[in-house]
Amino acid sequence: MTRATKIVATLGPASNTPEILEKMIRAGVDVVRLNFSHGKAQDHIDRATMVRAAAERVGKSVAIMADLQGPKIRVGKFDGGKIELIPGNKFILDADRTELGNQDIASLDYKELPRDVKPGDTLLLNDGLLVLTVDHVRGAQVHTTVKLGGELSNNKGINKQGGGLTAPALTGKDMEDIKTAMSFQCEYLAVSFPKNATDMEMARQLANVAGEPYRHKPAMIAKIERYEAIPHLEAILKASDGIMVARGDLAVEVGNAAVPALQKRMIKMARALDKVSITATQMMESMIVNPVPTRAEVSDVANAVLDGTDAVMLSAETAAGKFPIETVEQMAAIALEAERAEDVTLDTDFAGRQFGRIDQSIAMGALFTAYHLGCKAILALTESGSTALWMSRHRIDVPIFGLTSQVISQRRMALYRNVTPLLMPQFEDRDQALAAAEKILVERGVLRPGDTYAITCGEPMGYPGGTNMLKVCRVG
Image (cartoon, rainbow, N blue to C red; front, side):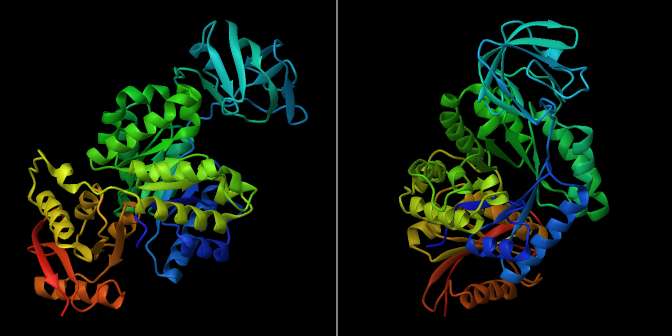
């Protein structure tokens, strides 16, 4: 059985060597995330080069996702690196302060905080581990009372319960980072903290302009981590190519209890709108220091798979953890086991649905035919990857192979659930293309003599959006 759910892994000090990265790809990594919150432009360029080389050595399609930092809503630095907040004590957040912080006061990276809060508001620091209640605002100072105390160290994040921080999704740093990401033609660009569709449209426009010299347009991923984004989910999805269920900041803003239902809703909406979804944050957190996951983490990954997510993501587990390779292996094993329990309900999926496009109708026809005939595989000859994407939105236990002559499409399909992307030469003759596609799958051991498979393509060959043919074949 081929694993359908894809794995996104973050590069960092623990995985930033060709040897470790190659082992991670062999263990199951399909997409490598470059976190632009850390490192300089050249660091990311070098890592992208390393990813391309490792993927080529392994012989696997691997996409690169550049993850923008977004606005820095953080406290500043402290004398000694950290302080201890005591419940009931007063604490001041000062937007004008330039000196190091102490037990009573801290500076802010986010200068607009005094304008964004009012008495009675709740501020959550360090992913909600520390809680402050706003007493009053005086000029640039936000005066608070510590409600939930603990250790506060340099540059920890600030969230406002219920949302309401006005920081723009794209900063000056993000705009420069987009240029860097386009220089190595990342397949996916993840935008942090978008509040609405306009944020995603602006990011796409900037990326397309920066990618113009390379004739490259990345797919856009909206990271859903703001309270304000929830009412605009559908519009944000329509303006994007996919979403990341970023459960860390989202949980702090909407509350932990609301996140599981939101996760299910977002994944379901993404599939319905023909978009991809990535489930992220603390999926295998304990494996940063332990060689095996907790039972709760196993269930969490399995539930995301059963929800229908395209990919599950590792952050610190592979960037800074002690067991990056083992973590990927465990995640791959959990995903594969969960997929065995999936229900295939294709007939129900198609009931009452209408398809206005020929190519989309052909994609759905291939699924239906392959499922009912018990085909060994579905082969989608595709220029843009759209046919494979549409097929991947429905649960089916028949593996889908996206065959394309376009390297960008091949890598982009690495994120699509249940799609194995393969590169093949471009043919003008349909029969030659079909014969070549079958040969590739036979050589890979997927198809054997006597096996049936469904194959889709377009005539004339080589035009995106032109899929207009479905054929059922038997290997001779």
